[in-house]
Length: 182
Image 1: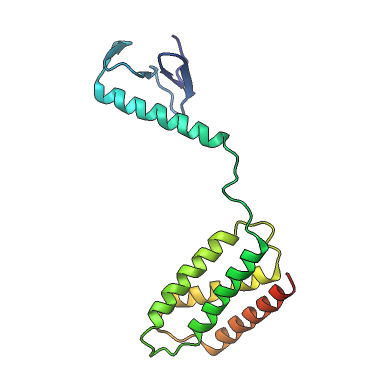
Image 2: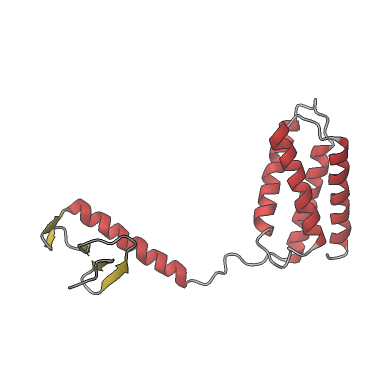
């Protein structure tokens, strides 16, 4: 079979697949799946090369199947779930920033807050329906301020009074908005 200099030909026993390449090559790479050893255009393929080609073809077919599947994995979370998880995160923020810096559990609490905030942000940041909500905006801003502080200054550094007041104000506003369904 002839192929252009900018494509790769992969042939199985049933259907050949022609894949365009980005680099221009003078010879086509021919993979014969299912044959342990063959000679194609003067190049001898070994069992090891055939196994690699088989893996390549299988990965291509798996990628093709993933493209055909509907994108239902990223379904929207229910409103009740959002409210419950947001209240949980707000509680962790309040308890963590109110801890005394000499408390031996402060590092553990900061680690738990970081995990909870990363989970909350990764779950709800993708939700287009939540991006305009006041509660989302304020909780996201508060989590960003708290996480940024602990990343920059460490888990035992106290949060400055102005920053703490702003975080608590954002959290209060978010709780009011949640009660109103916003």
